[in-house]
Image 1 (cartoon, rainbow, N blue to C red):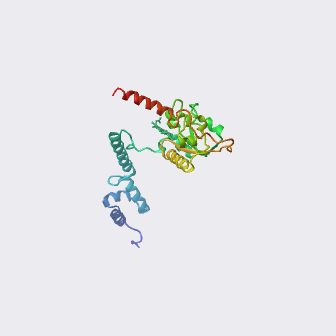
Image 2 (tube, rainbow, N blue to C red; image 1 turned 120 degrees about the horizontal axis):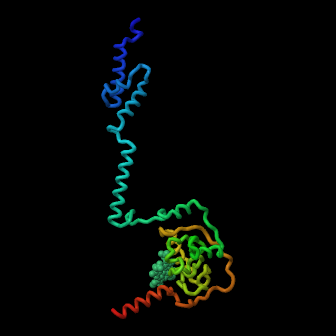
Image 3 (cartoon, rainbow, N blue to C red; image 1 turned 135 degrees about the horizontal axis):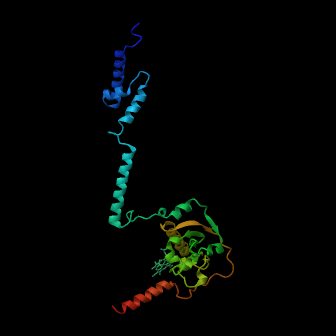
Length: 249
Ligand code: HEM
């Protein structure tokens, strides 16, 4: 009869046994656990959780420790990079450093006519600058010093001048066209592919869509390059400066 109702002494012994079993699981002192296992109706799992909470973080590696360590590494990385290269990324650049590029990934690709493309020529500072080559349109706004007003390659902005990308005939407006008729086909294809690869891969620029041209009409552009021939204006200006300076050397 007396064995069915545990005495106070038995109860304490039961608690002690349970605490020591829990303690061995948790690798801690039974005395600490006894304090948390107060009555028979408290399940052992609850007391383990309580104990974990109370004794928490004395030895375990928590989320905060991990974040602190990560922050430390990041700080070290930035300092080292800035000290050695003057940039935060060891001089490495990516398109993803431009918020406009990230935004463009979520936008549908454009499909423009030639006259729509013309409004992206850099004359409006609120509008992006686009360059097209054989139908592929690129955002080159990050190169506005080159393609914007006064830039040395401004003539490429807001149009598809694939022909001039191949023959370098920049100063004759009739050559600033996508019309490749009369050019060496193999050379033109390879030049154009080269420039498309350039705009696809350069971290400052990115592909935004296509320009859909009207069918070609009339005679092909002249095979003779007028103006400065195949030498771009700015290059001629640079060449003259170099010649003048070298006269005094
Ligand atoms: C088929 C002939 C050529 C084509 C299609 C061409 C095209 C280009 C383009 C598109 C850029 C801008 C690249 C960028 O966005 O960073 C550029 C830059 C440059 N090109 Fe040319 N180029 C040609 C020939 C030449 C020649 C013959 C010279 C000089 C001898 C030259 C000198 C330069 C210089 C100095 C720059 C950098 C300056 C700047 O961005 O204003 N290019 N070229």
